[in-house]
Length: 143
Image 1 (cartoon, rainbow, N blue to C red):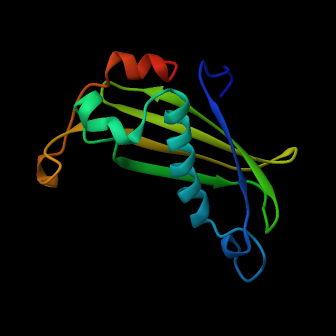
Image 2: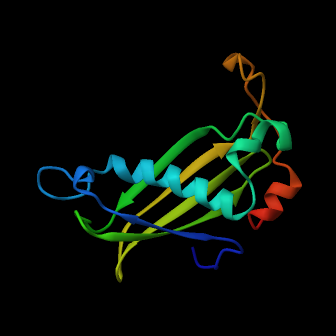
Image 3: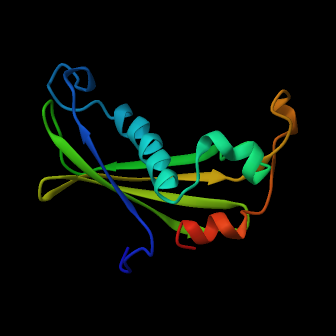
């Protein structure tokens, strides 16, 4: 990304022993778990709380429809990763959150999650449907 995002969050993650494979390198699946965690903190910083989706936004949430990761440099037990997260692409009802994992002066990984703003009946998943992202949420996240 050549342009600095209007809104971002930085979240630190300490790589634990249980995050590593037998070679001592961080298991790749943890990066996907961490991207989800970092999205939570991005939204929280924007004042959008997961606990309020239904009552405040008349929405069920933002289901993940796609995810991608590129692994640039290994991280290992004891490393502290500094993750910069931001919305890098906006659609009518979908958006992409990008995450850059820094390990000191190196980039350990880069990834993204594509999510969709959804409505529906919480007791019936078959009713999930996309809805336009509310202007207030878009603005809070730098869109």
